[in-house]
Amino acid sequence: MEIGRSGLLVILSSPSGAGKSTLARRLMEWDPALRFSVSATTRKPRPGEVEGEHYYFRTPEEFSAMVAGGQMLEHAEVFGNFYGTPRQPVEEAMLAGRDTLFDVDWQGGQQIRASALGNHVISIFVLPPSLAELERRLIGRQQDSMEVIAARMRKSRDEISHWAEYDYVIINDDVERSTEALKTILTAERMRRARQVGLGPFVRKLMEEESA
Image (cartoon, rainbow, N blue to C red; front, side, top):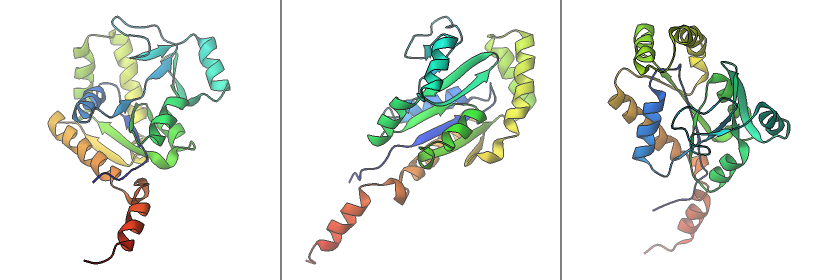
């Protein structure tokens, strides 16, 4: 039977090119009820990106106003642009028992864990099998210049150095195994006693039942 529970804030971080986006997509295919957090950003839309679906595109002035007004759960500057997570949709999902998946870097993860919603966070870091493979994937995407790729590789070392701050670490050398590991983590975390807010009333009712 279903027991009511609070929603999880699932932080998924990795250096660019480690396969985080693929794993996030597979996780959401496994559980369509999993909500992906839509970030706000000051960068320009890329071809095919849709407002409110991929990002909330905001001017630097609009973004700063949201931060000043306490409307951001986390925010950070990445390669000259600002990214952040609007707070209200996340809180509403959590209270309704729906899980939210975050694609954020270690800075964003720190801010979310330090927020008032920190007790509802589980954090997962995805490592590449090697830096050479990471660079190969970045080149293969054909989205960035070699100069940008070099900058991403430098940033990757810094990001990887924060691996020990996460609850779980997955080495993504095989996407099928990594996907199964994510499913196992999420299933187990949903069953934690503290998260099952409907468990107390259920047990009290159980204890009140008369033996047959």
